[in-house]
Length: 347
Image (cartoon, rainbow, N blue to C red; front, top):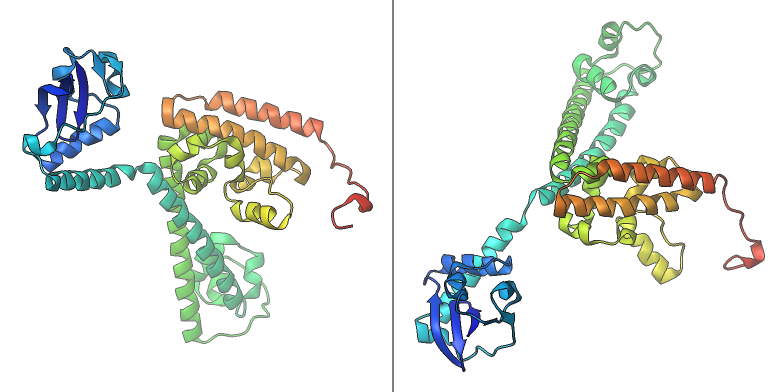
């Protein structure tokens, strides 16, 4: 007996004939649920009801119930059992909808979160530059006293130069010009918008840190929440990142530079997103490529642990990365000697 499964049921066949059938319910949602179970590698209840009589199977998924063989089951027609092609179409549509809904996991939301964080980072930088330039016409010395959010808070809460100086207990002569009430109101409106953007950026950053510790704790420990989330975003998902080789992880975010290298023969990139990691960014230029390569190799292992085994191996990976970085710094303490000008490309 050969056990085979069609979209409308499971069948025991012998000598080109159906000996026993276990049909699926004639309901699109029920059929879709069974097709999804097959896609996930599950054994269906209808298959189990026939498995004891099977000696051979047509799907590797059922190999524990018989030897896998090739079998032409085209003689099993859905219409012979009351199933129509319209029912099959409805079931596949339901299956597609279910696949779309379940494909959006927390790692996809993380990707959107880090995009929002980068947008807010860019927005706050632009607004901050505009605020300093505009308010500097009235009180240019203030940026020498306070900076960052303290500067924004001072302008938003106090406004005029005299009120800011009084609130901060400052005594100085300013070369800034006087300002009309209408102009000052517009500046404080801008500073209030910047303050809210800064607050939103901080909230999004905390969200990314929290979700990264839940979704990818090993990557978070190794690369940090923001860099790790960017890697997942560029890869498309945690599952795709876990499938990438270390060379691909090393160059994520440097695709334009790589294409330029392939097309124009320019220098190949040594790192992409990983450039923002402190171990790479703070290293001398001649060490960055090797450090990025070592870090990418361990991030690959971290991604696979986060996606497949869910084991915490962050301590081991961090120790290995730190050891390798120390070796790189010891082996290459000074920049390499350049070749003579005649041997360089284009000379």
